[in-house]
Amino acid sequence: MPKGISIHIGLNSVSPKHYRDEFGRPWNGALAACEADAKDMQALAQARGFTTNILLTEKAKARNVLNVLSRTVSQLQSGDTLFVTYSGHGGQVPDENNEEDDFNDETWVLYDRQLLDDELYAVWSQFKPGVRIIVLSDSCHSGTATRELLMRDGHLQPATPDTTGIRYRILPIGVRGATYLAHKRLYKGKQKATPQGDHAVVQADVLLISGCQDDQLSQDGDRNGLFTGTLLQVWNQGSFVGDYRKLHGDIIQHMPPEQQPNLFTFGPTVAALTALPVFAI
Image (cartoon, rainbow, N blue to C red; front, side):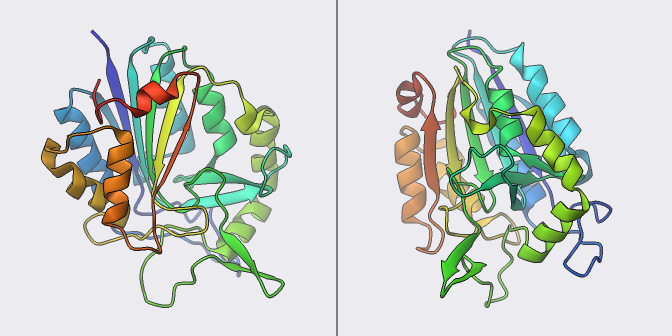
């Protein structure tokens, strides 16, 4: 019988010992709905028969996330499924491997440091051919080659400035810069340790549905993030019928134009994965 393992990550804050704002002050990145997202997605996965793991806020340290991902490598064979959800801030650090079109590595903002997309690709490359990896990322910078900044009038500016009081799941520009400068050696070391970056050879099939497009931001909420809440609405406690393209299309229909989730796939036989019933093992 095929096996399914899921990992659910949700952070309502991060460690102010690592993150700093542009004035050098500790920054905790408070959000409201990320832990609830992780718990709700864990419940969904359990209902579908997955063996689940959950890492919330202080437990969602880079080492813990990488350890639980790495443990699944030996547990999954061709035809098995890994289901990963992330809810939290999205960030970027300068690309030192020269393999990103936008000159930045995208990150998940974990409790004690940012986890680089290079590190995730290194993990994906360890899985056996035929393993199916489903990733839902309810964060900013969660598309294929996301960009936090747009060029306007010769200056870099936030893609969607927050003028409405909405909480966005974004590492602010000042925090991004100050945190990187304070820990530059750490992040450059992680990049040096993963020189292939997102050009690593991946034989598993990977499907990502992200919270927004490259030049958009993902909204936090009071109960769920906008993307996760909409996904759960479309899923409708399992009454949804269809494949991943239909799920993605139905979610888009319920989302505002300023936040349109992205569907990104790669892998030798990923077309077959895309056409499977959603969240099936």
